[in-house]
Image 1 (cartoon, rainbow, N blue to C red):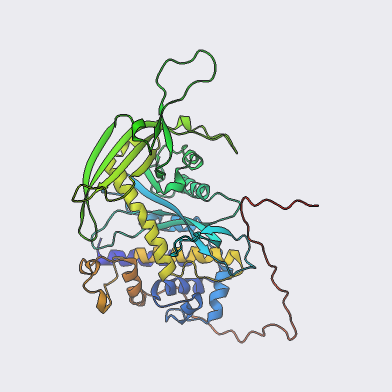
Image 2: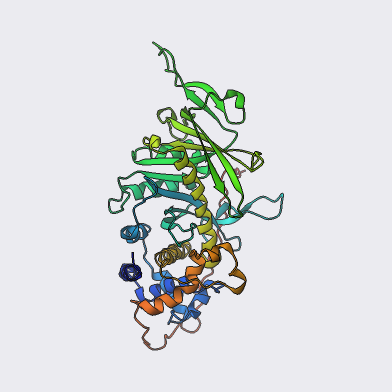
Length: 467
């Protein structure tokens, strides 16, 4: 595509986005542009100081309060701009959960205990707040573009009464059922960390024949071979054969397939990657709170080990992957390895969003406004992705000799630095503000009632018995 084609694509997306805002479209459009172009904001209200935001700071909160954006709209907006994969025979999707810490918001509803890493060794990595589940498309590497890009498709807050992995399963199910998306009936591969390897999640979307799930398994789990032998004439049929304990190599049977490749790190170190696979493995199902018959879903178990130049393992423990789905045989071992390696782009997306887009920095006592802010920041990132081929590299003086800068690969940070120039050239569909007089404000003597204090939801906590 030419530069003019990319300009038309971005302009078309911006006009479609503008017309999808049902309320306060002008303020919301300028707010999204401000998020995309302001690299120095330390709080959400500072976005009103961006030159493209021509309204007062009060308009920011009114726009967020009046926004009626739906979760499914982002994927439908981006659908026409998703390029079909050329280097691999499937679409790659990533699903993950990230926290938003809100320990100092006693009036915020539905706060719970969420994970948060801590640099202090020995401390528990937990805090009080919310957590959000996001599903994104992991695109193929493009020339001149950083490999860390993702395309966000859906995001949703996980309620304390919900299972965070099953929320992601419902999001993925909604995407695969949407006939307006290009991967509706094509082969899709989703990647997830260890939380997504439990039976409830792996069983949730098995009704989609075009979906293959690649999830990491903990190194202390035990799986089983399929039972091979005469069927019982009476009684319960036998499904599980010999056990396969990941931490006991003596229980492993002969490898069904193996492959070897090389990996060069960003520091120039070369590693040898050894991949082994065992076909038609099984895991135990569940009976509570509902029956999950995992014996109906055999999977491929994959073991990946990296060796350094001296032939020693680069990591203490190997990487175990579960590959489950009706079309899993269409994936080669190298496809599986490269697909899961790209899962870490979801981590880069969350880090960039929290550091550069203030994804988790909106301080509000209203959970609905917080959810709207997460939708708007995902919109802003999607707009940066559409402008990746139009931005110019403006590295800082101390960044000019970095390998990424010398390779001239456009990262989300570089696009954000140049986005202000791009929208000045292509224009905005938002109309300038019009003065309508001064608001009378609250009448003298008005006193608002205090917001109610809400308790933190702790799962598994026993209720005190009444005397």
